[in-house]
Length: 116
Image 1 (tube, helix red, strand yellow):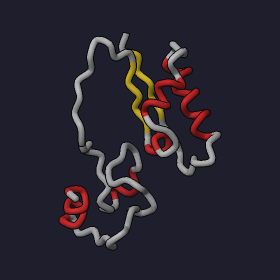
Image 2 (tube, rainbow, N blue to C red):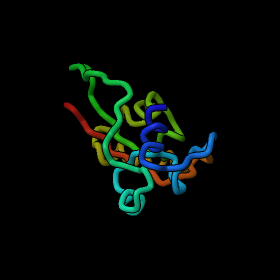
Image 3 (cartoon, one colour):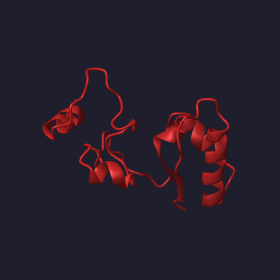
Image 4 (cartoon, helix red, strand yellow):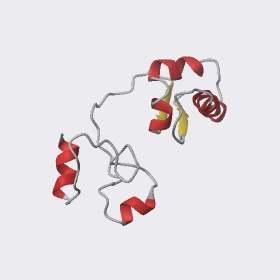
């Protein structure tokens, strides 16, 4: 609701069940220059809903667009790349797996960061 309020305060008119702004299913995004420059309500300032601390046991971080998360959850993503040590190859594996899914309806960006 905070995000909806932010958009409405910017003068963005939203229908009751509207889930997209200019075709995008998000109101915050990296890139997407055109929507941000044309005051559509899309901004690049991150919104952090849950903060967590990495521990010494954490080996990797996956940064990805909704194109990946619409297809799989974090547990599935980490299990898919568990045996792949190279972060670039791990990213490619996640992208290839998502693209081969019938649920894949979006573009996909994935960055895997090895912490150790």
